[in-house]
Length: 110
Image: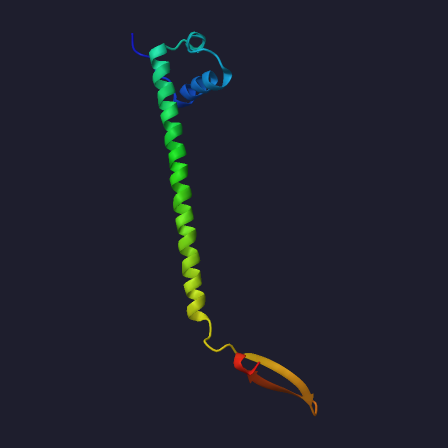
């Protein structure tokens, strides 16, 4: 007689039913005709996968925070290099004989 083969979905369903439904390990094993040793192995694999996923999420969050910090640094450096050294504004002064007179003004002239 060969060992039965169970799909990952079935294993997950059985383990989740035990963990969320509050049924005992023995009751679950009887209901699904699964050996307790196999069930215990599935449960350990399920919990290990959950811990690995949680650790992976934490790692991704740290990487994202580091990347955002680097983006902010680069954007600041880019603004510093592209900003003109002398800020100039074009000022529209009053009309003189029907035409607009424009003058350039630096911050020192304010």
